Length: 221
Image 1 (cartoon, one colour):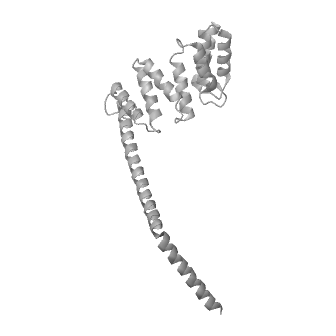
Image 2 (tube, one colour):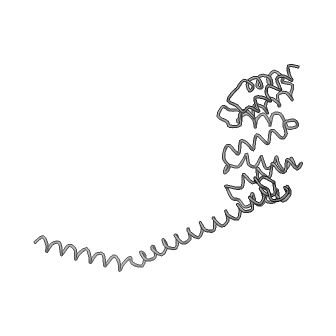
Image 3 (cartoon, one colour):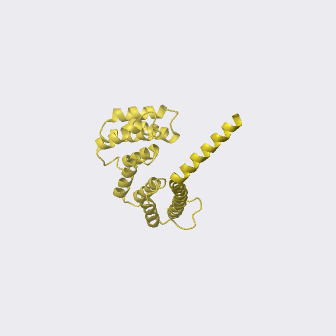
C-alpha cells in the first residue's frame, strides 16, 4: 500500500510541475536569458575597464619617463611632456591613478615655476574623497610648505593643525612647518619649543631632528 501511495504522490507532483512549466515556462526562460546576458555584459565591462586601465598605465609610465623618474631613463627629462602626460591621466578619471598623477604634475609645476598651478592641484588632491587619507594629508602639507613664507598664516596654521596630531604620519614635517610659521610671525618662543621637542624625539626622521637642532643653534646665536 505504501508503494501505491508513493506512486500516486509522484504522479501528482509531476502533474503539478508540468502545469507550472506550461504556465511560467516563458518567464523562466526569459530569466535564464537575462542571467546569461547579465554575465556577458559584466565580462564585457570588466574587459573594457581593464583595457582602459592599461591605457592609463601606459600614459602614466610615459609621463614618469618624461619626468626622469624612472630608474634608467632612456632620454633627457622633458617636464612639459611629463606635465601633459600626468594631466591626461588625471583627466581620465581613473580613481587609482588620478590623485597620483595630480601629485606628480603638481611637483613638476612647482619645480618649473608654476606655483599657482601646483597649489591648485595639491588643493584638489587634499579635497579628493577618493584619495587615501595619507595622500590627502601629504597634499595639504605640500600646499603649506610651498607658501610658508607668503601665505596667510591663519590659513596655513588651520591646514597644519590636523597634520600635527599624534597619529598623523606627517606630524614631524607639519611641526617643522609650524615652527617656521611661528618664527615668521615673531613667535620665537613657540618655534623654539617645537624645535626643542623635535630635536629630542628619537622616533622622528634623523633629518628632521638635525634641522631642528640647527635651528635651535641659530636661535641661540
